[in-house]
Length: 547
Image (cartoon, rainbow, N blue to C red; front, side, top):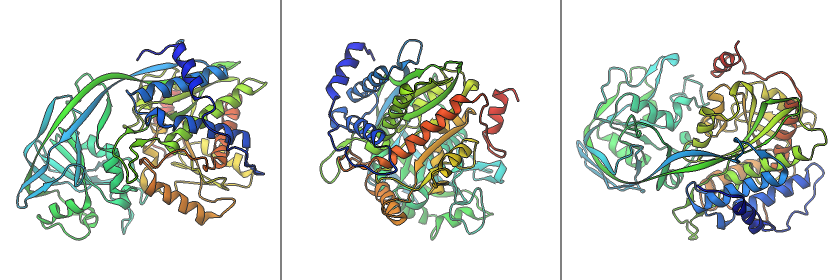
């Protein structure tokens, strides 16, 4: 994608002032200037003219040029060898599925987009399953540390496995895995990876709302249409032919044919569980349209005055779903105002505060707006595996994703609380204000594996994902919980996640200011935060730091 300075300037001019003037509300606790800056940026980034900010689209060009223009305006230097952009080579695969035809003990004809969704990572024009035997493989988990193997003594070559979402610990009557806190074994990406390692032809995940933490409509919206993947030399031929989801209603009918009835999660949790051949096979064909192109991460840097080689890395993903399935009101633009125009707005606001400091930071501050988070954390994966700045000199990753828009709170939520020393910094900063810090509000949702900080954790960099909590200062905790529930059910990954003048960005400003103050503290230190004992990421960091 060719990007030039003239385009950047013209895009910035085009968007100037489009946020409106609804920023006069004041409160004793909030930084109203910060709240106003965040609101302005959200109004720009969630505007219909950006077409839902999908990678490879005209919306991408406008989005990344706006971010780069803001970096330049604030005095940030280009962060990638003289450029604000890091190209991320990807392939876009648009799959059109025919019916999911089941024959054998039971006969079913499931409709795409209604009863199931299916796609492929394999870069082929047509691909499919023909009379592929169906096997129920429980949770689809191989976890030696938990003495669990759903694939034990099972040959799935040429077969299609049906697996359950989340892991065995969720709402289990006895303590399994991490209890209600999802392990990586519960993440849908893991299910696909493990099925491929086992040699399965296809893998279909059974959707259930509570263990998934989102409704079937999120699957219908997020897992249909074209999908993006990082380019690979083998053209993804190491993955299953078909990856997909099936509704709980359809899965219930399918599993019942093999005598699996009642609570299917309890059935799969039994100690004597063995994978169950369903006595039926599936045929399914996918027609694919392939497009090769490059998306972009956007990187700006404020160089440190004493230890410029040591970096503090702020991240937020700029992308969303583009134009897709219309909602009941006929709106088809997925603007992603909260998810994640709010995060990009926050790191731009942090950059402004750093740029305004009289005393410049001793360590370098890097601002990284990443692409394709919604497609599987691809932009952050690309950076983490091809870093511009050495990982063993990266002090911390401070990630901001989907800040709530219902005002100030007296508590804050750390995704994966207890993993690393950054928690302690946040607790100290909030304690001075009389605020509380909690862990995941919904630990079963697997939030730790669902945003870009996870890719930095995997390579050992201490990573923090901070959110405003549920305790509304003005209206109480029940109000906050209701607003969080309302967002998850009515706006998350839907066209209704859009900008409104009524958005209360003062709570976003609280979280943003905490992240800024944390960065200030880290930038003045000579030590490096680490992972706590027992964290699965500690060994990677210790090795990188020569410990």
